[in-house]
Image (cartoon, rainbow, N blue to C red):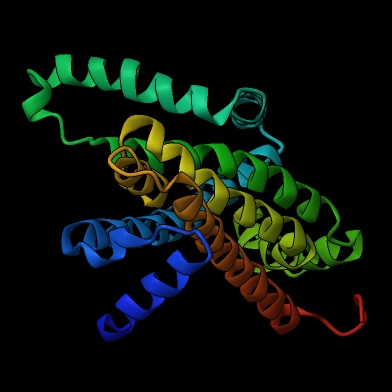
Length: 247
C-alpha cells in the first residue's frame, strides 16, 4: 500500500473501531512487512525441499529392497504420527544443542532457528508427499511397467522416466493439499522466534492494543498465500493432465 494512502486507511479503520496505527510507524511497518516476506520465503523453500524429500522416500518405499523400504517406512510413520510443533521443539532445543556441542559452541553452529523450521517442515511434509507418490507409483498400469522391462529399462530408468512422471500426475491433487497445509504450518516458526508474519504481529501487539487488527491481517496473509498455492496447484494439474485420465 503506498505510504500516501496509509494515513487515510488508518483514519478510516479508526472510524470503525480498528487500530492500525502501527502502519504509520516506519519501524513496526517494516518489521511486519519483513515478516510477510519471511513467511513467503519459508513457504517456497519448504515446498521445494519437501517435494524432493517426498520423491526420494517414495522411491525407497517402492524400491522392492527391504534395506531401503523399511527405514523409509519407519521415517514416514515417525514424521506423520508426531505433531509438527513437537518436532520443531525437539529439533531446535535438542538436536540444535547437540550440534552446538559437536562444533564447539553455539557461535560455530551454522543452523539457525529458521534453518531448523525449514528442515522439520521439509521432512514432515516430505513424509506426506511420499505416501501420496507411493500410491501414485502403485497406480501406474502394469502394462506400462512390463513394456518398459521389455524395452530394457533398468529399475532406476523405469522409476525416473515412467513411474515418477505418472505418479506425480496421479498424486498431484494430494500433493497440492499437502502444500497448502505446509504454508499454514509455517506459522509454527513463531514458537522458536522465527520472524515470520505471526511472530512479527505478536511482537507488535505486545506494545499496542491491536490484537484483533493484526490477527485480521495475519488471516488475510495466509488466505492469500494458500489461495495462491491452491491456484498454482490447479494450474499445474491442468497442464499435467493426460488424455484418457480425468476430464
